[in-house]
Length: 480
Ligand code: ADP
Image (cartoon, rainbow, N blue to C red; front, side):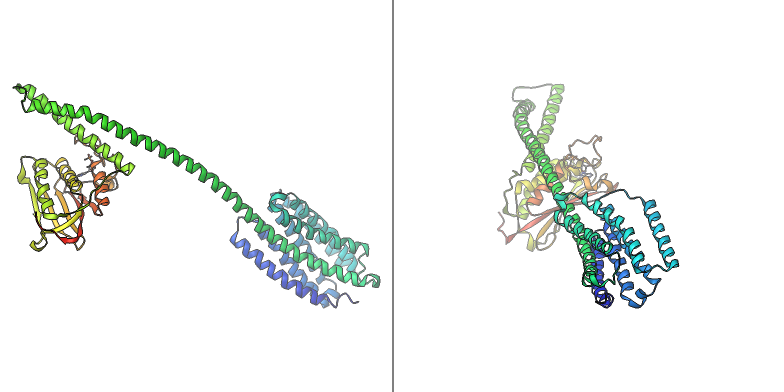
């Protein structure tokens, strides 16, 4: 049987496979560039392809010279295989040794070309020089953790080692490919050699996939571990928060009882239930009462905040006539502004036809928000400066109530802090009393009622705080 007749079919079929596997390997590398062994492995099918092209050209194969490029390609393909395997298993690569080795092979090729060595001699040197990268590849892959790469490792190592088997046969027949005694076996050995290269490529692809799979497994284990840790930390934080809320609630209740006694007794002294008191005493009683009131407000705010955290703030929504709500709230607001009521302007822009419209809110909470707005307007403005309350019919869904002052205003960098609890937006050291919770409570309340809150402000010009109060579905309610 003529060995070279079947070469073209064999090499062209193999070339098809090499090309497909090369593209697959390259594409996989594109998606997984962190596994740098893959790009080296691409060299294996690439140089096999070049060798197949050279070998398929029977004319060149028959002539001396061009065939050496085929032999060089084979060594290159096995060297790229070896470098890839070493990179894959993180073995140290001695580049100097590789260059030296390759240099020696080139010299041998040139020498053989000069002395006109025949096919058996050329093949012999090719085989000898390829044994080392093949054995090194097997050695590198043998280092892989069998538990993690079991099938992929043995499959690839088997086909790489298979090349050695083919080499052994060629050594056995003393590279005499024309020996009629071994004709069919020689052809078979070549077919198996090409087959082993194709399966090596397949092995490299499944190894790369296994690497990615193992990385994912490790990541998911890490992820689960972190998730567990996070849950533990969250539970701890939740418990600490629960404790804090419990503490705040208990403390607020405990403090309110004696405080109410202080307020009650000082008020009865103020109202002179138990007889006359002198001017100095009256002044001190006023101070005690004022201080007590402030403390009560702080404690009430604290209790409210802890209720917000707990989610136990109760809102009682009902349909309320909007005009009546405003009328009932105004006396409270006037009281906050104080004696100088001329500074407090009410601008009600709601047309007569809408005056009896109803809103769907919790009356007490709505009053609480407006009280907070007005008392802030008083606190953060100069005494006597104008404060206005504008009431507008915003749209089909909301009325808008704004409290406008001509006070100190708010710096832009503090805007984000305005509604944060216990944040005084830069006023921590000011003489103005407060603990920075009023607006955060107001925001929580109005949002629970389905409304909105916001503000505009300019330093030195003043601030406008507004709420959008939701209109009720049942649009009109009888007045009274
Ligand atoms: P408190 O007044 O007790 O500090 P608030 O929650 O009511 O707490 O307000 C938070 C912060 O917003 C205030 O500390 C203040 O810096 C700022 N602020 C609120 N209203 C006004 C206003 N009308 N003018 C200027 N700054 C204001």
